Length: 313
Length: 293
Image (cartoon, rainbow over the protein chains, first blue to last red):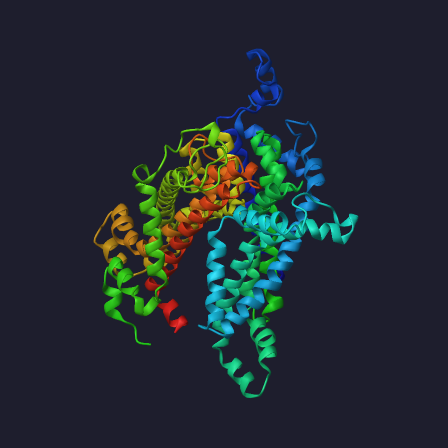
């Protein structure tokens, strides 16, 4: 088992290496010129050349990559081209709101979507099932920002129940935090709920046909216990997998939601960096989120044996 | 359940059509097809349906509510929202179809190579894993920001993150099919590698590719809207659903219609494409039906 886990952990390395190559090449082989951004609009060709020289942009690609990746492995992601602040500091300042938003979204999504999927599978082909399925297809078809604006329109413009935009950290009190975070979290959760509910339903439909479910029913296990303990436990592996895979959706959702609701998090940082062509920030963000995604899915892979003792490594 | 050989022997297009009948799928896919045709009709024939020039500004008619002259009202420059919306849909749909064609073309080619040549397999698949690990929206906005807001660069930005999924699918089909006796026979008879790849292996991937293609069109339309919305899409002079909605952001409190109407049409369009894709998948995959029954 230890050998397997070690192999699995090591298998992450080539993927991360290729991610870093992609990120590096993407920003070097495209027409934009980082030196031109630093130099500003009125730069003479001489200053441009000097900056390019100082940044090492005239070195061969391989040398550039080597010095770039050594820096990153040592925790140095470079400085923002716009503000001059180290990229890692920028990310650290912005990460709080995004993490609290993401956690709240995951909690909402799991607590709404799993019961939805379980009930849909339990009452297969009933109106509840069709309702859940319709919701989940709809969730994939609506742009995230449209959900956000409709929620804003209803709860903050029309009803006036919630403040429209902005963000307050939990440190300022749970009330003000929830007041501002609930709409963005619901917006972000909509597509995640669609994804998890759909997978839960499919996994439960498979499990509910198994013999041991019939046995459990025959020996008089209550329906609730049957569904949420006996069946759900055995349907857990695909559900947990989709929660991990959905992390990618969560990231793109965070970018959009933070823009709509004016939340100063990683998503806004990304959009601002892209619009300003702040290369080191873009590189760092793609690299960090990809690493996070790979690690989360690694952890999920390794957690399978917790949910299903038959899975042994 | 006995295996229906006759169904399996039919060409995939016939299989696709015979799989979808109101008896087996319900009315859903037919309603979806009708809605999609309506949206396509409205957008493709937009130059003849539009009530106004979608680019003509009228400073006196800014942000007007719906009226007889302007079916859905006007935007921040006094342009007719309805005319812009249906013309914008034309470009959004075109981007979706282009992205699907390019993603399928490249994905099928790479997938065939990965599935057939063991040596290429490991390298290609690790690269695809890496591509899948990067959040697609981040790659897309970065690519558009770097390559400029042209239609071509937006199509490319939407396409690249879609390729790994196509590659995986094609590879998995090729891996199962390449061990079939007929492929061995073709090899023994001295068929060229190209002929084996394109004549014998390629047709097997067509059915799942049609399904995948519909999903890519749907997700490409959504991504285009998202990119424009974030300010990293096609140049704002060209009306697309995303651009129209992005411009509506600042007037959201006064005239929410600028976001809501194109959003509604986009949702109807993407929803019906997704429903048709689901129906095609169920129709093509007999295992899905067994599970449902």
